[in-house]
Image 1 (tube, one colour):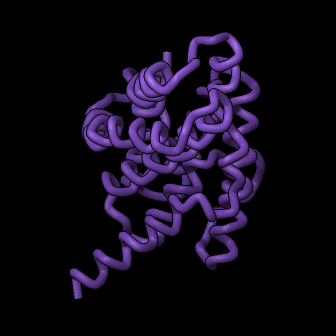
Image 2 (spheres, one colour):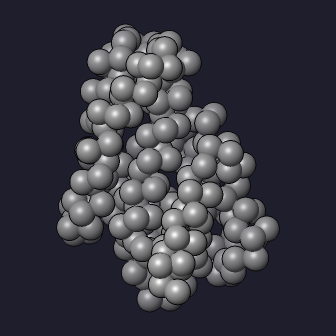
Image 3 (cartoon, one colour):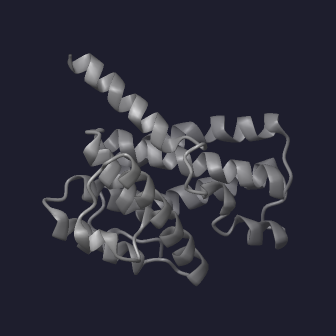
Length: 202
């Protein structure tokens, strides 16, 4: 029975991180478009370096540790507090709008799946990571596995954006993802070890 539950949890996670999930994440580049325009990112090698840097110095220090904290939260108030903390963190209005638009879309999916959303989180704005954590809690997905899944979803969307913006070939995109998978695999433990004072992208 436990093995079956583990498999179901994995399948639930695959559903959550699928590009087919209708949240519109494919439409956002998280600064990559500007980096391409400035020629900071101009080929496969520079794209890999850019994505690795954002993963390690941004995503693994902000979204990922907050997700893990939310998975261990003891009640709706703690979830709400972390949601507010996360919404205060974006460095630009564009990143804030991206997060809250994705959050609203993800909340609609949770409600469609009959996943309960606390009353305070039914109001705008709400972070995508908060809704992703609620899904993980509802489906009993292990926190570290959920964190790795969130990072995979981010990486896949960013490589897809780089493929169009630079542009890159499909083989080059595949090689970037392959090169970054070992980095991604180590991030949940690194993120979980951060104290709140150490969290943040700056």
